[in-house]
Image (cartoon, rainbow, N blue to C red):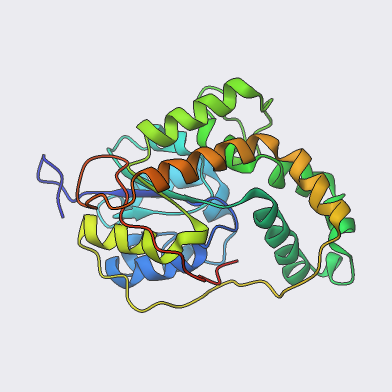
Length: 263
C-alpha cells in the first residue's frame, strides 16, 4: 500500500494503555513484519522505546525507510513531530475496567506491588494521577506545544479538553474502535487496508482479581472525563455499524458483540 505520492503508506497506532494494544501489536507484526513495526526487535523490552517521544523522533529519522507502522504509548499529536503523513487508528475501553486492568498489570510486573491490594496500588500518585486518571482524554487531546513529557505530561483535564479529544477522535483518527469489540475492529482494519493480521489470540492478559465497590466508585469519579469520551466513542462506533470498511475517515466496519478476552 502506497500514498498518493508513491511512497509507502505509514500508519500510527495510538496505543492507549490496557486496550488490547499488545495483542494488536503482535498481529500487526504478522502483516508488516517485525522490522517494519516500531519498536523494532532491537528496541523491544526498552520501556523508553514505547514512551519517550524524543527517542521516537530520533529513531524514526534514522530508520524511516524501514518503518511502516509506529506503535507505543505516544499521544496523537506526536505525529506532528515526525515530518511524515500518517494514517492513524486507536482503540478505547470502558474507563473503570481499563484502570482495573492497569492496576492488575502493575501487580504482575512490579515486585513492589506483588502483595498489595488493588486499592493500595491505586493510591500510588504516579499511577493514579500520572498514568491512570483520564488517560484516554489526555492522549487524544494533548498538543505539541503543551506536551513536555509524552503521556506523563501534566495538564488540566476539563470539559474543553474532552471536546478537543472528541474532535480529534472524529477528525484526526482515521479508524477507531472499542476494546470490547476487538475482533470487529481487527476485521475493519483488515478490510479497509487489506491487511492479514493472522489468527485470533490473546496477549498480556491480566489475572482476574476482585475489586471493591469503593475502588470502582473512586476510579469512576477520577475518570469522569474519560467516561464522557468513551461514551462518545461507543456511540460513534455504533452509528457506523454496517458501514463499508473501505470508505473515508472514521467509517468503521460492522460490529458484532464478542468476548475478546483482551485485558
